Length: 407
Image (cartoon, rainbow, N blue to C red):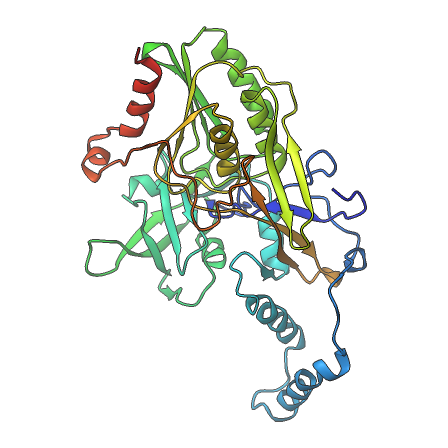
């Protein structure tokens, strides 16, 4: 990658985020692997060099400035909020691309998205911010969201009585955020229920580790990744060191409901399980490619393993799962993944006027598969039924155990 282009690069893993007060979404920000730390930013917009042909701007923008002047001269309510109009123009420009992953964030939205993940409060749910409405994908164990009975697939169509129709799901997410002990009323649209209904929830302090691990029966090691944060690589190495010391016969890597995260972490995690080879390839609009290989420092490159995925496994999760599948290192068990195969840059604008998020590349698996819109197809398809969910039976996990324990 070019060392003179200090832009934030992100895998568009903002599919599922945590409803915490002021937190950013796992899957948003990832510095260039091996070159830039997470959160690095250009000094100004002059650091961004465009290679696209530029039309005669005076002629191109003549209608825009005419409209600007007409609004100032004739609009009923005066004076005009020029800053708000400017931000609206940028947002409209980004919307015109027709790319749900390229967008404008105003200063407040950009600040919220960069806030740290630790020590905040919320309702405790993983959510999808890519559809028409903010959608619950999974309530966290022991969270207020779980306590009030929120379910995966629940769409939040109003918050505190305010209709969210036409509101960006990311903005709706921010409206759900708040301090511990305060209440928010969510109006929920649920499949199978005729009418929307209100769900009052009291926010609470929530701490989410990026990794969870334990030994299962039958001497199987289990490692779940909730996200790919800037500490996940080290956490996974520590977890594997402890698990492998117990001589397990197999390992289950659980990437279900994991929206992705830092590219560096995805490379590190993949490298724990692959002795060599390509992890991912990034392909740009001009045909240029960057290839990312394993680091060669993995400690779990030989243990038999299965990877659990579902429809909410996205971005960096798909990157890791795809690499392991292509190399024949592990079977995928579960449901077809989300299909998030693009890469974005977050570029802060001058005068602290927020940032634009621009899709700059697609990423491919080692076998050059593009998951966008299709996802990864599991080697063994297993769906958890509603009856299994109600009974607390994890049929996907059980199948993974069977695969690792069968003769």
